[in-house]
Structure formats: C-alpha cells, structure tokens
Image (cartoon, rainbow, N blue to C red; front, side):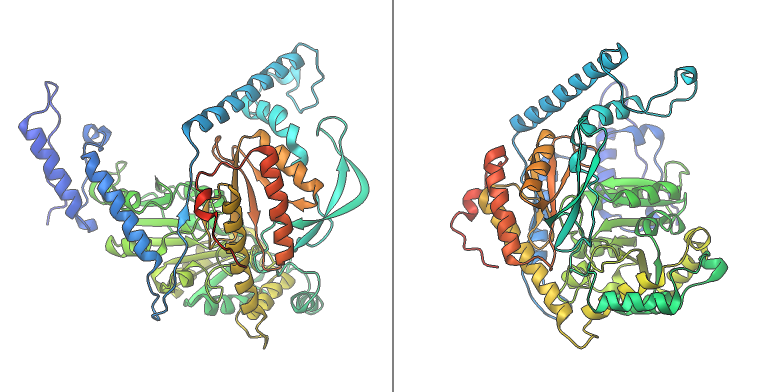
Length: 581
C-alpha cells in the first residue's frame, strides 16, 4: 500500500477555485478518519505553511463542548474495580480584560523605573552594587543578558527578602526561618542570630514525612551505621547499594509495574532519561505547563516537539492527528514514535491531568505515554498510588511512570517505572549511570520506611490516616478560600493551592505581611508564571492541623481585604455552602 495520502491541491494566486474547495474537503475528511501511522504523509512546503484553521468555527466550538461534556462524565466514572466517586474538576477563573490591562500597566511602570535607575547608575548618580562586565572586557562575549540583568537588579532584588529564605529546622508543618535584616534594599543581608518559627505552607511535604524523629528518621540513621553515606563512585563503576536495590523492588510493587529504576536526583530523572526514550525521528507532544526538567529533557533528546494547550484533550487529539497525517517535515517521512508527556498534578496550576482521556487517545493513535507523578504520587489516590489510582486506571496503560521522592516521602531522588524491557534499556543507556552516584543509603531507607508506612507494612494505619487527612485539608482549605472570594486555580482534590494575586507588586506585600503573622508562604511571579498571573502558592500537608489551617485562612482573609485581592466573581456560589473539615 502506498504511504502517500490523497493529493492536496495548491491555492491559486487568482483566488479559491472549485478544486481548492474540493481538496480542502478531502483533506478535512481524511484527517477525521485517519487513525493509524501507516497513512501518514508529508505535505509540500506551501501547504505546511498554510494556516489549518480553515475549518468552521462553529465546529471547533462544538468540539470543545463535546470535550467538556466528556470530561464531566469522566469525573463520575467508576474505576476498574467498580468503585464510584465524584472527582473535583479543574477550575480556572480568569480575570476580566480590564484587570489584565492594569497588570500590564503595573509591569510597564516597573520596567520604566528599572531603566531609569539603570540610567542613573551609568551616569554616576547611583552606585551600582550588581556584578557587571569589566570595562577592559567590554569587547568580549557578554556574560549577562541585558534585559534579564536589568530585571534582576531592579525588580527581583527589591523583593528578594521574600525569596531564598534560609531555614534552621526540618520543613514540617512548622519551620524555623533564620532571621536576617537588610539596610541596602535587599542587596545584602545580615543575620541576627535568631530564628522565627512559622507555619509552613510553602514546602512540598504532602504526607508529613519530613520529620526529625519517628520510625522513618530512626531507620535512616541506622542505615548510616550499616552502609555509610555514599559508595563514592558512579553506578556503572561501583554499582548500587543494597538499599537502592531493595527500594527499586518496593517501588515496582507499589506502582504495580514490572520493574523500576531509581535515581539520586529528581530533576535529572526527567532531564537525563527523556533523551534515552526518543530520537530525531520521534515526536514529543508536551503539555504547555510541563516542568522545566521535562522541557530540558525534550530539548536534549533531539526529537521534534509539539506543545498542546494545558489539559485540552481536543487540542491534544488535533496535535496527534496532524503529526500522523503530515509526518516529520524535516525528513518528509512518518514519525517512528510519538511520545505524550504530561504531569499528574501541575505544581503551578494545582490542576490534575485528565488521565483516562489521555490513555484513550494514546491507545487510539498507538502513541506512548510518559506520566510525571512528582506531585501526585503519595498525595493522590485512596492508597497514595497517584493519579493512576485516583482515576481508577490501569498502571500498565502508562508506558513510563515517573515520580520523585522529595514531595510525599520526605527524601530526595526520583524513579521511573514501567515494563522490564524499558527499565533494562534505561539501565544501559541513561547518562546518570555514568555521571552520577547511586542514592545514598539513608536517603533510600527514608523512602523505604515512608513507602512501607503508606502500604501499611508497619502494622499501623498511619499511612492511611495521613492520606485521608491530606485530602480533607485540601478540600476544606480550597473551598474556604473560594468562599472568601479568592480566585483559586486547579482541582479541589489537589494539595497545591495557587491563589491569584495578579500584580507583581503584591508578591512582596503578601510575603512580608504573612511573615509578620508567622506564616511562611511561596509567592511566584514572572518568569515562573505568565506576566499577568502572579500568585501565592500554598502547599498543604497531612501534618497541618485544622487549627493551623483556620489560623492561616483568617490571616489570608484579612490580607485579602487589605490588599484588595479578592477578585473572584463566583463567590456567590459558596456563600451559603457549609464547609466541613
């Protein structure tokens, strides 16, 4: 069978003729009915450059409506065991255009003042305290990007005190912050020698295993006595520790996959292993809000990259269809492999991926699926097995199951789970085997102890209670914030709670005012978010008590009134709603 698809007629310079309309109609019908890679074909350059938005806008709207209806039905779908539950949808309430204009105006004023201060420094009216190029080396290649340097010197430094806060204790439900003062507007800091204990709603400690005492801490300390701190060599040179071998077996069992491999660094788990799975003849389809480690891994792989709108299944399917139909424009051949990369919970949005629909598309078009569960493993699902369990899906339908040990297990490192053949391939080809050390024995033991607690192997119900308490905290905290009038992104089942404050100037205000009330929170702005979507990101934990949450909520309510950041127009939906913990 020929791999060439139906011929596509070119647009004539004199206008659109009957043959052009017929060609567009055939192309449209062909794309609707083509589901297999064998029918992929390459287009000529003129057609590739053509905007494919010629399809009727009403059809696009109806497709989006159908996708929304399908998503709502999925929220109530029973899992493979027949257990039915209602899952909270992802919510993204957007501000009005006038608000966006005001935020852009605030950024414009900030940047105008930044360039004005740069002018004062160059003219000698103000001392430049930042690192700059030496005058005698001005002809060298620049070390700093001019705009980034101006932004860092004049915008970031002014609120640097709400970032990079040093800590002096374990970041559990509370954390001790090392006190510091500045007398030059955050260019330098002086430590006072004291510490302040605050309620910690800024750390990833979903199940509360970040503890300096307890069975997990004792087991980790014992591992140091038995196996030391490090093997002082790479995996391929020295080999794994016994604890890491034990951990990999436990992770595979916990995930329900054939095999698993563990790494000493979570970021490198994505950035160093994604290139081992695809090559220049492959296509990676990535969610627009994927983590920087995934973005780096995609770029290092050499594969073609396509980005689809966040959690938009219609956009994902259209991207897959286009890839199958038109093939690789660089080689004019079909892609040999298409890899879909998504996250379980998106750390900046608080949203949960629509895994059942993604798996359905993956099966329909014979693609591969890479699932990053860094924020969802341990935190989601009745027994902490992530979004796969949360949605009631089969773990074997996910080709690559990735996660980290830093969020829910109180440790460090990451893992990849999958088929035995896939893991064997990664053991041979992953650069981490040559250039990094295996996991430290006490770190591996911390994961083993916490994961065993989650699985109930310690003989208690502690793991089950932690998972339940986290779910209660997340739903209670989110609904209370919405009742107050804040715009909160994501799903009510997610422990990541982004509160939109929009204006970049609010970041400094929120960070400083909440610290005065002994609350440690993370504020985020551009470039980590869009310029118009600055936010305070709150991370909830099973270690937080209801009293702690109520105190934080009262402080946020007061601060929201003071800063006028209660922008929600849906407050009436929760006005008379009784919210219970």
